[in-house]
Image (tube, rainbow, N blue to C red; front, side, top):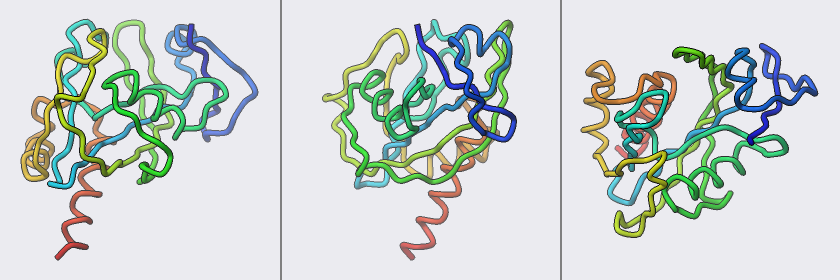
Length: 181
């Protein structure tokens, strides 16, 4: 069973801990993390969520992400989640923190109240070297910056409705274009 450190509405630790089930049932604030892996060709690695996921089944999503468990820092959680979901080994030096936001997502009896941390990892990964956790991920693919920006700009077409995640990535990609010009 997973346990989360519960935060208040300002992102401050409350000293309370709750299971995933309780946190989601009661809508308790907790931390979540996201990573986008970008290769040397500036392609972004996306995962397609499995059909059995409660939220956003069969939708294209961030490279990897999940909850920060009790006792973890965000960067530790994203290293763990990336290994679990797609079999990719990251370390702290691979990660660039690009921002954080609040989000609330609800569906049926799930109330996800997250303090999100967003990371970028520049790393070349061969798709054949990826090992999927099929309970979480159906497939992976690379998309170009242009393809992804078009999907985002087209009302997040075929993407999860994690607007904050996509908007932070969009800002990062657009800033990278400006820096490289």
